[in-house]
Image (cartoon, one colour):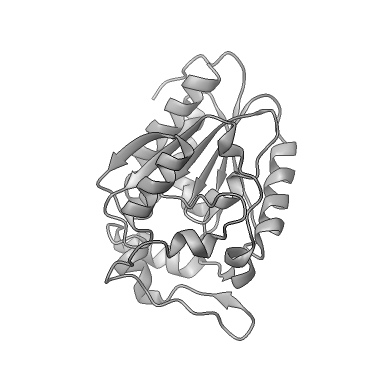
Length: 234
């Protein structure tokens, strides 16, 4: 990929979902940089939606110029809090998009679960961990063995509070939005994804990829991020 002559040095902020950390974006970062964009992987604590929104706000504050914010899975709820006027576009990668007053849990369980989806339950401290077999069965069934080993090793649990807190008024009601629907997703029903994308009036790209295409189909993820950046920044 070559630099795309953006009119300004814009930044892409990448926000990881549950059971992941910033390293889940490793195959996305360099291609975006090579196209002339700054890139930051926002560290969110996964302790509550409010905490995660605060962490994203602090990350955006470290940038200059226009920003495109990208969220995977649970992080869809987080990026919807990015109301800063410098945020020009939101990109959802198989991500959850609760409306005002809804919770992440409500949209996550809106439609029937895939038979290979893991059983999820909080531990004694109120955190939900992904079972080891869940990574290969549903989180990223198209990943390599090495990717699965690393994903299991670096996983970070999500607090029940994060998925039970009502969402504020979402930025997708006023900002241009893109949505990558993962048609082979075993975590978030593709039917649910299509519903959320329609409700957001998003530009939709539907692909036969699993729940975590940032690992298993990174070129497609890069393409939709660049499409959003070209449309709103260049």
